[in-house]
Image (spheres, rainbow, N blue to C red):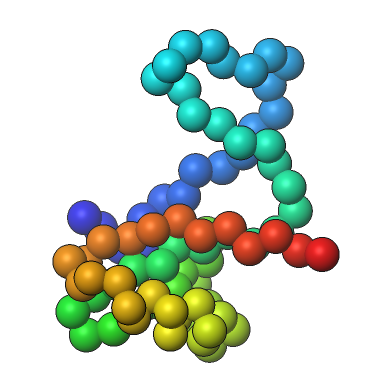
Length: 80
């Protein structure tokens, strides 16, 4: 898998899709990033591909508890 990966972007639609294969969520303001757990540590990427780990060290520390198989997880951080 090529890193940083492309994250899904929200888009407005007039009607929500139907069917069991569709998964969607409402769009709220906040930060979206990808947390990648490697054998050596954790990397947090912004949607742009910029490394944002210094801004979210608490999440990086928590992600260190995940198993390391070089997976990536999307994370959403709502703003107040």
